[in-house]
Length: 190
Image (cartoon, one colour):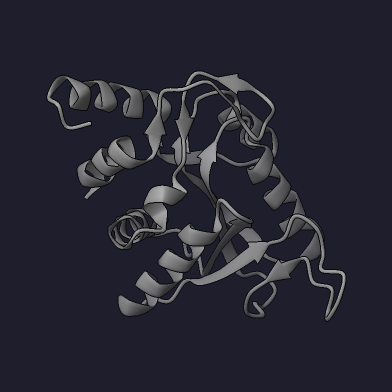
């Protein structure tokens, strides 16, 4: 499953072109994970691998900052229920709603002490992950048990998450994607 997800990430979500990232940094490549995590196969594979990364942690809910976390959260919640070990989802808004209940986090009510995981699709500087960590600390009584991402661009996220008191677990690194992409180009599969 890991190898298949790596391949489809390289084929469908990895682009060699200059871009400006959400962190404001300029990059010579772009990883658009939503092209994969919103596909049926990509959602399935991502959820299976994230659930494996959560095994033994006691995590009862997973969430992160919208929009990168949204497909991951939904896929994990659905897959975990199908497996008979439900992991609930929550989404952290960039800012609180201006109407209704004016919530800044969406999802089911979770009791104090709930073990949660924070997730994002791509981590560059770790800003979105740290924002999510801070919001969970400020607005809930939950315990953050794991911080994960689908791809670590290896540009400071790990250190920034460590400064926030957590270890970053990544399913893939940008270097893995670059290396695999090169091998796919060589064999004509990209």
